[in-house]
Amino acid sequence: MNSDTGEGRFAGMYDLAFNPVLKHVHQRIVQLMKNYECQSIVDLGSGTGALARVLTKNGFSVTGIDASSQMIAVAREKSPDSIRFIHADINSINHADMMFDAANISLVLHPNSAETITKIVMKAKNLIKPDGVIFITDYGNGTGFSGKIASGLMQMIESFTREDHRRNYFSFMKLKGIHMFSSWHELSVIENYHYFHGALQTIIVKFEKK
Image 1 (spheres, rainbow, N blue to C red):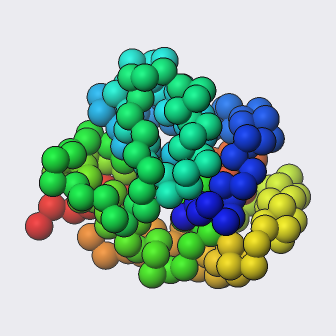
Image 2: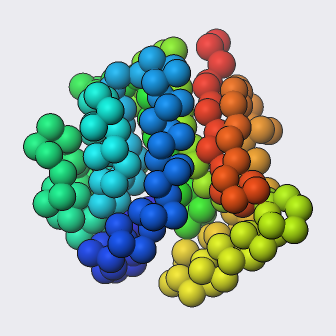
């Protein structure tokens, strides 16, 4: 997760660097959330609030949560007051008074250990209604020549991150990246969307009712 000693230091440059690349991804997520008739969204690891702002413009009620005070500061500065931003570690959130139609987790999992990834996804489960859905966007394995080039470029970018982020990224990819969730117990992958020939993907998942 973001921290004030890590990605948070570059909060002011995030939108300039990544929004042009992620614009299509954000548009896809908006359409998918409309398809599932979601109204209230919790954006876990909301960063500078770029996706939260796009969702709000499309009529969704959004709460963003991020561990970085710098990211939250930029998000609040750039966003309308209708978006609620919470500065907190995702796993420390008390969900007793919050229940959403959907949770979004975009490019948040790969910098974390397998144990923390599990905790984040389970926290998402606890923050949504019993019939809610979880949208996860993260790295996959690119297919074909173009996909392998895209995956290689993303690996190159990740190679320049801080040591723990880099280590967790390579561990994430050894676990087949976003495809790891297809083997999770009680978790069903409903839909899967590819960008950059599969190097980046969005999956929609639901926990099976007991």
